[in-house]
Image (cartoon, rainbow, N blue to C red; front, side, top):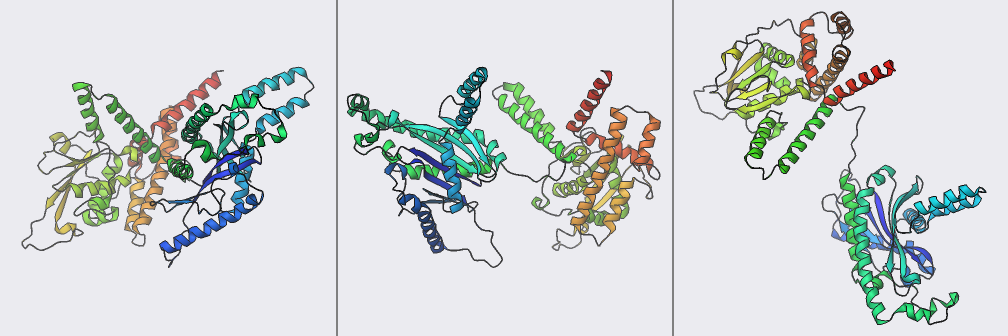
Length: 582
């Protein structure tokens, strides 16, 4: 997290002072040929940082700092913690090591220990001549500033934004028997700091309560030995000599108030953890434009899986009913496509659509792709589950995420309404109604018998397997949807790399998903007739050669639209109808 945490104190003699500061130092980006410094270089770097810190605090030392204004002596090198995962170093000293940060923290310290909101309201109240308005501002002042303790947010673009939490520490020798402190978190990112408000507030309160409880024990023990309230009431009071009446102890360090010898090391650990944890809980993602339908569908599926998991946790101890529901949920989860990485699969596998086209041949690949785009059930039957999964991994790129329902490898046949990608073991029979149906295609993966035993590379799939494709639908080679023709043009162009073909396929899918959205809005939501729908298809370029396949493809892809998009359209239409009726 690009922020800085500081502990501030309001000294009775010198005003607001910075006591302790922790900042995160990110490692520099390594340049080509750079050498990682050793331990000696790091020790030298720490000494240099200590010199810089001492130089920054020299001006404050010349101002005759008292004991209450000082945490670490000038000769102290400070505290350093290194995150082994990221290489980020967390440095703690009384003042920041950079002069620019010194002034920023100084201003945040002064503003955190002054009630500027109340000051502005007092100024506005005094300017008002109307008595009722003055009373209103007075009551507003009581609401906004019920006390000095608590969190507050302020700042600007120039000096940074500050989350501040003020609190009191008990002191038997201070005015009112308490001293005023604050912990400030300074950052330049306003949105990030506001989003981190609950997290910072929760963990800073733990640190503050620990300090207050420790100081309260010391305060009670001192009051038992020598009650200061009775001493002050029996002595003559003079504001000029008030600090000296307490034997010069008007400024006591936080270490003496808490009797915690390792206080600053403990605060360094707390502040360092706070910066690390706050920085890792929120991450930034670059989104170029609106999220795609695939992204929305993935988010919805992830939400459903989290709800199922929470349901399982709530059903623990529910007996046989909970076990039955859990087994059904697990079985349903098997039908969601497992997005496994190709490199994790062992043995021979298909690497890309172009590789699959080279293995199957142009004719068989076109027939298989046609069935995939039309939403027909694609069945692969063989003894190698890894090879079948790799085929599904490359074929799923042809469809939107919402249209993919897969059972990777099953010991029995699954109906088409449950999955459009089905992997079967070689001994599973195909039902007769499926074999004779034109809405399915079967790919049998047969082992090739070899006369001599010799090592064969996993890349040489044809030497290991033979592929037989059968379907009751004999699709002519010269027909097919427009999208299929464009995909084949991209795959047959050897000048395009596999990465470029993947991006081209992504653009084609987005183009046709936009057509699906228009057709869904026009036919399903608005309820237009067949004649008007035909005109829209002509505008979308879905008519002409392959019109029947184009329309069938668009209707199948409608099932891949996200629930969020569909509900958004229905809500917009209903809102428009209510506006017209009014």
